[in-house]
Image (cartoon, rainbow, N blue to C red; front, side):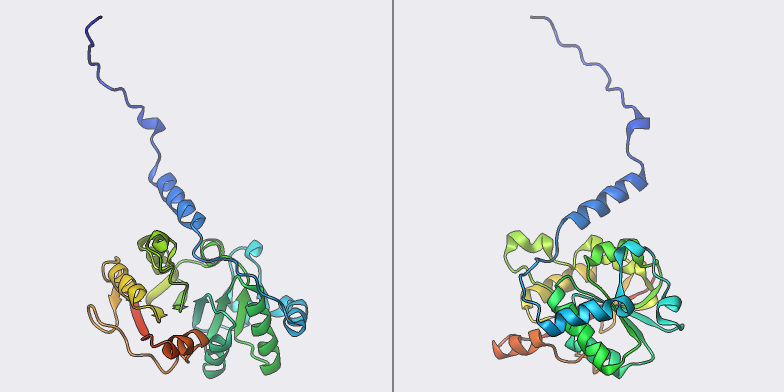
Length: 252
């Protein structure tokens, strides 16, 4: 048996990943973890009809790339993005109550998209557009940095099993993706009826770089008048759940 002789490890620095490659890999990994599940849902005739007829004017396509708000809404106005609007009733109410704001909703479930489009057509609203796609893909491919006045995340899937916590939308990496899309002073507004998720949100956001808790360190915000009750909120309250709002402002 011959003696082992240690030799210096030769590192080819040219083969090491660049910071950009690392960032891209992290973003790809983040997007590969689904924060939602595709639940089966039957489309009503009215919902399907709304999708067929209203999508050309109210729908936005991931494939079209970066969105020009002034062109899409035919005006310059503050723009708020809501992720996961469900059946769309609360988003519709917000758009009706604040005609001076442009709203963009993202939802993966077609029945909810169809219902919202049907109701938008009935009301004649001009300040609401919709994506039917993965929110993280839309943010990455379509939303310019520093362009949003607000991001709303109301009653997202809590993924309450510990082994599924990595699928929660509020994660350190995603919080920074949101921060990049917000203007300085723009607000990330969250709401949940799961106490454990509220604690998770507070833990993540309290240490997230470039944010300030609008209610004060460690404090939850009162429900703003601008956020109407949702079906999930009312259901949670019937089950005896509390409701927690968190509002964090981009500071840098």
